Length: 79
Image (cartoon, rainbow, N blue to C red; front, side):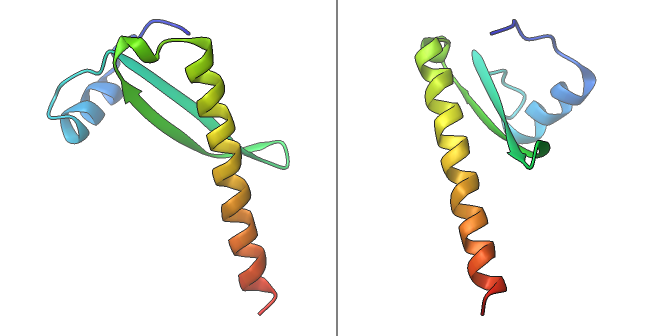
């Protein structure tokens, strides 16, 4: 859980997505497929979300999301 450092890319992102407001807390979890990062899940919130439990929850939800996406893709290939 590292402190935020505002880069130009992040500033532009928050201007587009949050009307320029910086959230108190950011969590970005990788979507991993066959050992490679294929995407990321972004969540923002209050400082209360800056806990190991919240990070663990985000990691579990990200893995579940990827499982569901892969299951949908597998179903489309078999039809």
